[in-house]
Structure formats: structure tokens, C-alpha cells
Length: 89
Length: 267
Ligand SMILES: Nc1ncnc2c1ncn2[C@@H]1O[C@H](COP(=O)(O)OP(=O)(O)OP(=O)(O)O)[C@@H](O)[C@H]1O
Ligand SMILES: [Mg+2]
Image (tube, rainbow over all chains, first blue to last red; front, side, top):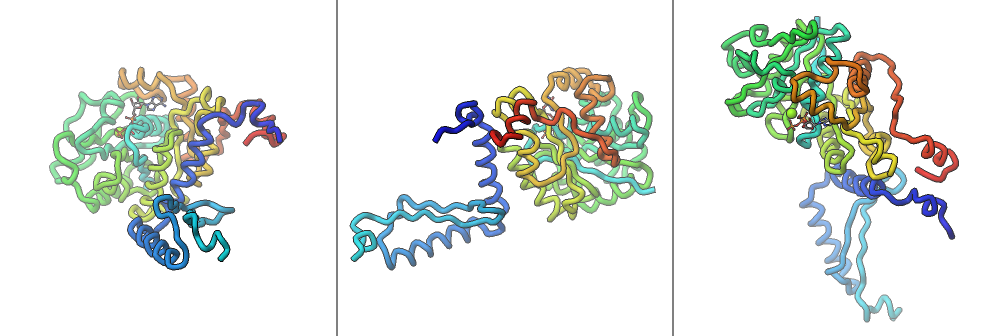
């Protein structure tokens, strides 16, 4: 699919990046949950999930995201290869 | 009579609080208001030089707070406009020399005799910031179209509400140093982007302009010398502060952008 915006060069320009980054940073800043609590939660989540599947802890990602006026905690947790879940065993 | 106290703040340093305080104050005085510019940046005073009144200082904020003189005696009258006064900060004492209660009391006192007290807030969110916001009824948050400035502004808005008991309805922002050439190239956040991110009312939009530097060199706020578009932008902001319905004309969009937006081809 071709994109009009790309053709007209409207998609370039750093302001878009600035706005997107700010959107996420502000969500983060505005949450009343403390950084410490967030870290603790992360650790607990990792522990619980690890009980069931092997996960790749080095590549974890947690972030706050805006989804239609609501804020979501999005976790991206890669599971290691050779995992029972993947093999469907 | 009870006037209004308005704190000019930002969080981030160097975004234009002092320049804004000087020009908004001068513009309000030109509209017939009596105005006291209060420099709350203790230890780093600058409003005096921006106003060109540095040679007339005898007493400062600390002398008033510690009771050496009453506030009227410390006020420096600006001879260029009727009704414009400066209460300078102390340059020597450190900022802990003042408590929030003392500031609040002083501002209450000034408000009984003047229409406006504009408080030039120091950068940061420490004690000096708290002293500057505690007596304010309203706040103008100065923000430049940069990621760090917008982020700090958001933080400050939260604190104004929580620590300063200034309700959201009494907070507005002044977008400073906007560059239309960069906005057009989409290399700079525009006013509507910032409005959307911060969710506060826009009081004014001030272009980035080298005449600000020239005016600081001379100690003469741009509003006082005339007719350029920068002076007009400050006068418009002051007018809005007084409740006048002043449209934003050069509001950040190019004609091409408007057409493309109409057809849904641009944001
Ligand atoms: N609209 C503008 N166009 C060009 N330069 C500007 C503009 N507004 C402010 N400046 C410049 O930016 C610098 C900082 O301005 P100012 O001292 O008002 O900021 P401030 O927020 O009070 O700083 P501080 O946090 O140190 O108190 C000054 O050199 C000033 O001349
Ligand atoms: Mg300043």
C-alpha cells in the first residue's frame, strides 16, 4: 500500500517523534505508582510467570501505554526457545 | 480592593519566565492596571536588569520580609508606565531566608493595594519554587516547544495543584520561542501538540525573536518600545489575562497544512 503522507513528505520531521515520546513519558510521570513499587511488581511478575514457562529475562520490557484514553501496562516477555509452550507439549 | 497574584513558572530553567514576567507586567500596566513585579528568584535576581531598574534598588524582598522596611518603601516605580512597580529579590541572602508563610502574608498585603502581583519564580521545584507559588491565585506556565520543557511543565502543573492549591482552571500556559519555519517543516512541536499533551489553556504564543536579546541589552521590555509582532503577542496574552476575547491569529498552521488536514492527509 502506498502512503500519501510518505509521498508528500509529511511523515518526516522530528516533531512526530517528540510528541510520541512525550506522550509516553507524561503517562509515566503522571502515574502515582512509585518507581519502587513498579520495580517490585516487575520482579513478582517475573517470578510468577517463570513458575510456568521459561522466559528470557534479559529481554523483558515493561511500559505504560495510552490506549483510547486509558492507560495500559504493557509487558513484553519473550519466552525462550525449547519451551514446552512453543512445542505444544 | 483585592488584586490577583499570578506566578510565572516553568520547572525547567531558562525558558523565559523572567522575560515573560517583565512583558506581561508592562502590558497589564499599559492597560491601566496597577502591577507589582515580585522577583522571587532569591540569590539569582534578574528581573531588575531585564526591566532596566537595577540602579535604583535600595531595599529588597528580604528587607521587607524581615521587617526592616514596609513593602511600599521597597517598591521601585517604573517611570516609563504608570502603575508599574518592581520588588527586587535579594542577591546575597540564600533562599532559605524566606518561609512560605512570610511570602503568603506579603503577597496578601500587596494585593490589598494593587490589581496584580506577578511573581517571577525560580527554576526547579525546590523551596524557592514553593515560596513563589504559595501565595498565588493563578499560574502561567512558560513552556518552550521542546521535549524537556514540556515534560517539566507537566510536572509543575501537578505540583501547582497539589502544593500550591492552585486549581487547574487557574492554570494557563504561555508557549515561548516558537519558530514557525521549524513548525512548518514539522521539526518542532506546535501549539496544538503542546495543548493536547498538557491539557491546559493557552494564554499566549510568543515567537522566538532576537529582539528579546536587544531589549534585555537595553533593559527595556519589548512591550514598552512598541509595535513589533512580539510586543503584540505579549499584549494579547495580557489582554486574555484580563478576560478579553482575543483570537490567536498566526496560530502555527500553514495554509498547505490546513488543506491537507482537511483532506485527512496530515495530522
Ligand atoms: N521569545 C524569545 N525569543 C528569543 N529569546 C528569548 C525569548 N524568550 C526568552 N529568551 C531568551 O532566553 C533566555 C532566558 O530567558 P529568561 O531569563 O527570561 O528565562 P528564565 O526562565 O527566567 O530563566 P531562569 O530559569 O534562569 O530564571 C534569555 O537569554 C532571553 O533573552
Ligand atoms: Mg528568571
